[in-house]
Image (cartoon, rainbow, N blue to C red; front, side):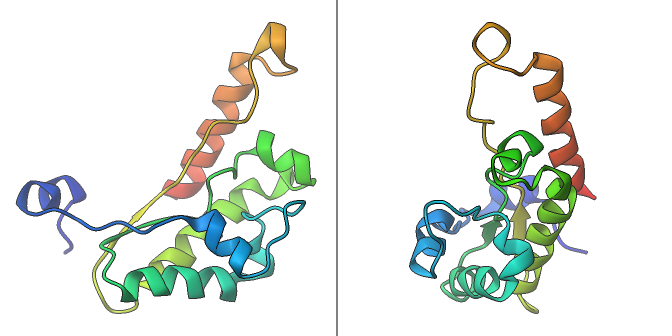
Length: 139
């Protein structure tokens, strides 16, 4: 059984991957497209990026899910795919390690707005979106 991440950190420093967005752009992502959707429509390109990081010695890979909460995904008409995009991001990162041990870390960002008086979203809606994303990553 693989050691828990917190136990491993106590024993040695770990190397993590680099920027995903920049690498997606180098692979052809245009500014008007959703990079997280690439987990579904271009999984081979996301895997190639993740694999390069793993092959370079990364012990930890962040999933390609930075903006994959339903609020952010709604900007690209992908809100209904939040769970699928997050779970695919985890599977791609796991696959990138091949037979080598490594840690997959779910990447979650803000939702790109303020709440209530300055936005269309209540704190409850934001919490629900993040809970959905976190559950999808964990599952």
